[in-house]
Amino acid sequence: MAQKPRRSQKSYGKLDRDGFIHRSWMKGTGLPDDVFDGRPVIGVCNTWSELVTCQVHLRDLAEHVKRGVWEAGGVPIEFPAMSLPETQMRPTAMLFRNLLAMEVEESIRANPLDGVVLLGGCDKTTPGQLMGAASVDLPAMVVSSGPMLNGRFQGQAIGSGTDVWRFSEAVRAGEMTLADFLRAESGMSRSHGTCNTMGTASTMASLVEALGLSLPHNAALPGVDARRKTLAHLTGRRIVDLVRAEVRLSQILTRQAFENAILTHAAIGGSTNAVVHLLALAGRVGVPLSLEDFDRLGREVPLLVNLMPSGKHLMEEFCYAGGVPAVLKALEGLLRRDALTVVGHTQGEIADRAECYDREVIGTLEQPIGPSSGVWVLRGNLCPDGAILKPSAATPSLLTHRGRAVVFEDIEDYKARIDDPALPVDASSVLVLKGCGPKGYPGMPEVGNMALPRKLLAQGVRDMVRISDARMSGTAYGTVILHVSPEAEAGGPLALVREGDEIAFDGPNRRLDLLVDEAELARRREEWQAARAPSDFTRGWYKLYIDTVLQADKGCDLDFLVGKSSSDVTRESH
Ligand code: FES
Image 1: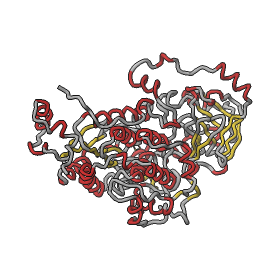
Image 2 (image 1 turned 120 degrees about the vertical axis):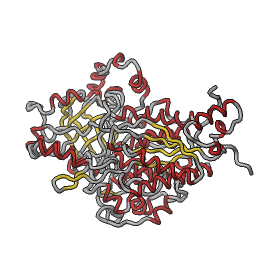
Image 3 (image 1 turned 90 degrees about the horizontal axis):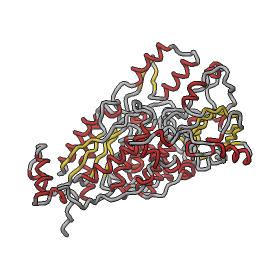
Image 4 (image 1 turned 180 degrees about the vertical axis):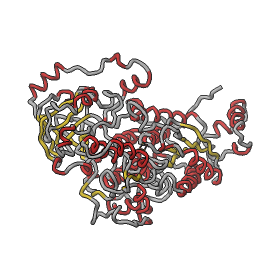
């Protein structure tokens, strides 16, 4: 039976004026006549930029993808997408994840592509690219940047982000000199690649593998490792096969795939940011997924990976120990074995072939690295639509706690008062930060792991219960309750908390409550006004984002971007 013409042939296969225009302006890039004969045209969507080390090597990796595409009989065409450098963008890269998703979606749909390889790595690029590609639903694969080499400072391994938080607290507590603090900068980021801890970038790259969207070992091979180039080359070959077999992204991104991602997330002690990203991605492909799925599925899984911030090693050790395939194997009977992957094998088959080479780094269900991990999803009158906490990064003794609120109305208020010697705070207090949700900041920045008051650090306090509508870096740690929904700026109960209110946190029973009676809360609600005037942002991306962004329990997508709209474009450009 004759195969139906590929999508690219609707542009390149025409013998009229339109076909002339589509081909001629591509021949101007140096392509010969015969590449327009109907072979698969593969987009290489590249978030390369010099704005951060995470993606600075992606042009080189793209060349290896292209080799593989040519070799398999396809035509690779590289195109750019915005890079979202996590450590550079203000007020937060998260504000722009959905903008990247829109750019990727429309770039794929508008151009004559049959499949796409997504090249990215920094925290928001992976979910942004995937969300955009999912709403078009062509065959797609991911090649991640790969992590940096381990950091080194004064003879010790140091981890991206995690040791920034630790050193910063040490300086504030008078335990580290400022000169040493500044010297550590050069030792922390020693090569190109993404953060070398199990932060958000490594988490999302690991979940890409667990979702079945990349070749095995995509997450952990260091950015500088030659085998990452090989992986890129083999991905180029494989995407051509996927186009020929017409395997769309939605055939890989099934409910089973998301369950494998959540199980893996728990096993690796993954970043809390993955919760919003997976919810948003599931929304694009129409897979039902809720906050409770993370708690319910993750509850069965102990911590299996000994990496910062939940453990002590870094991504290099994870790679050498066997990486994500070894984790899938360690999940044993929990793994959804039948989930299909872009490799052509099921996840069960990939797990069967995996080996673990270091049980100090990757444990087993019988001998895990730590107790049940995952994400706790809290409910209560302080967070009617949910809040989350990462127990593996928290202090066990604080997982059940009652304390008086010390309230900061926004991040400026927090910065102005946190080190004030007169701040009415002690080790049992609960730090509450408002105005840092999707609409409030805007963009829901990673400020939920508030640094502790200097006077308590001096007393030796190293953790406190902290509550906010913000996110926190995947590299951060502490008893930090995040993503409180609805956020304060949207009128959630968080907005009503006042200095000295008692707050009850009951982690084992997943409760978070403000111990103020209903009549008083109703009175406060009558007085409440949003902190931001509607006139504060009147144009551009900020306005579109604030007007349409969903709350954290829905993944922070824009309301009109949920779902997909196929790859069809019926009208010509001339
Ligand atoms: Fe890009 Fe951490 S800053 S991965």
